[in-house]
Length: 309
Length: 309
Image 1 (tube, each protein chain N blue to C red):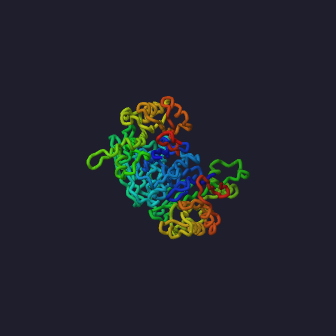
Image 2 (image 1 turned 90 degrees about the horizontal axis):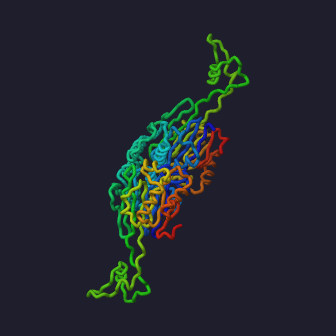
Image 3 (image 1 turned 30 degrees about the vertical axis):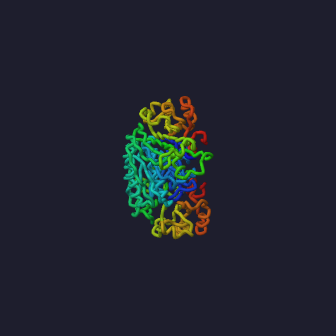
């Protein structure tokens, strides 16, 4: 699976019915990200046998406890496990101070370096980019400055059509064909037309994580045609006034957003402690957006969608 | 059960095999205490159906993460559950700063008041005392300043021997008899000799919690004749050099302490992540101190011992 999301926690602020607070593990082409890190995330990572040492980047959406209180424990455990690689921590300003204060009082010097990348959640910005993926913030509407995260795969290499390749081709020609270019000789003469020797690249996928937010029209443009949309749905529609008061969303807010951006699939989560049974939330959301699933702890959602299990 | 200890977490610094870090819930005569509060303690309190709203005092032994990282989440959850009563927090200096910083960044004003009682773990001191119980610190030997806690019941009321009470007795006479006094009339004449109308009080029990410590001879005097001793046993005896290096105890350190103080019963915990199976630790400890039990999450240990389940 080159694009896979595993839910570690999907509870709202108050953990209930054995559900843990927000945390997700995302892999894209051998890159390993942690998205939010609610209390107990390290236990969940262990429970689902996730290779913690491979996680090199952590993204924290905002400084409500249910989204970051598992981080300090995870940082200490990485130290106890003798982590060496730098850890990149993308978070709103303040989390650095919270972490450093606790390191001070525990008289700890970690076995690895934390690279803080602090951002302003209200300003859209690109947090990270390499040859395979980019990560942007999504400004959300919440009681605290809060950002979602948009993960986009870049265009993948063209696939070489092995049956058509010629014995005369050199490695550098193949490398050029993979980028989508035609190949010319030194004199500028066309040697190989790309379309004769390649098949289209595998599709590039995208995932948006919208942790805590009221209905937010402003993000529609940014999320157009997203393949997988995680949108919080703390409440059923009948609790709309509570949703407005706490700057959270209802099931139908999430569904409406999925509709508006033509999402491939919608995942809902951040469930209020008032709901033991989540089925009614799923049914209500599906009434407006059929391809919806509950974010269930331990479940992995892959792109393309058909491999989901 | 008027004296009952429930284990919420018994893992060492690195949670493993589903074991949570240190936390215990202690009730003594309708008083409800939380002792240490490792990550996930609030989930454990919920799992074991403990009435969180009744907990009015929390004791934190030291500022290593595995002993306090569950506190912030618990404090937020108490707020979400609309707690009103003051919460007394006995902790080493620094925890106040850690909590206040996180409240600041989450822009939270709690629904209740935290009363910080900060103490110096290296100085023996009485943290709390009322008519039923006293709580003292036990200076421990660890990498950080660290205190255990000694809970002692005060002498309980004498029991009235109902068969012997006289119709002429007034309520104030009964109250005096319960304190252990004889009853005199206004002229100083003996009306009722205490021993004629009472049975001895129920025994008063004591519990000592020694969270993280190397072998510490200095605490023997303080813990003499303790009824229930929790003593960490992070390692088996074969890891003695590791125990010395990390200022922790082995099974036999714990057993030796239980012997030295003539403990009624020994509980061991704070198990290293290297031990999946805890039975060998129990066997090794029992080889020196027979009345030993493992601190197993969800188990409740009561005083007197025979009611244990």
